[in-house]
Image 1 (tube, rainbow, N blue to C red):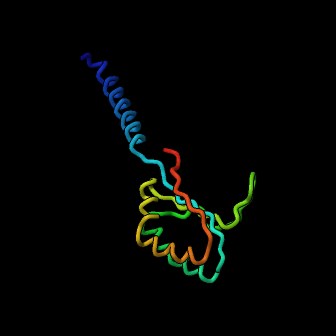
Image 2 (tube, one colour; image 1 turned 90 degrees about the vertical axis):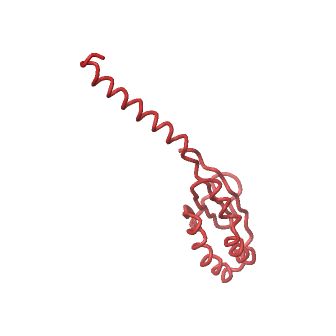
Image 3 (spheres, rainbow, N blue to C red; image 1 turned 45 degrees about the horizontal axis):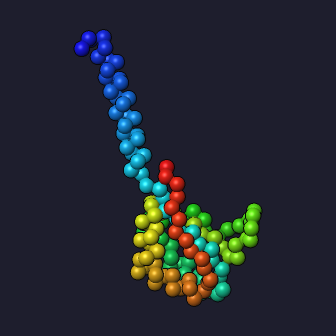
Length: 127
């Protein structure tokens, strides 16, 4: 190989390798998983027990609260009847693992006694 072409070849190889690594990395990063809930509290005092007990379980499974109550503004359709909660997990499988875990099921029993709920597990978009 010509000595003048060697630096160009090295730069080209680095660019190709970096591009390939970025594409490979993007292909292996999973979409986030979310637990989305609409919760209508029927017994505020009992619901406080659920709130206190659930946060450590969410953290144990790597969850992060994105939305936890707060103001909701209906833009189209019927407004939610209760508070909205969104918890983010690394992926859909992690969200499912949290929901199905014995630790969370024990805590969910507190919520069932204190509120009416609709709960969904949703896959986010891939990064």
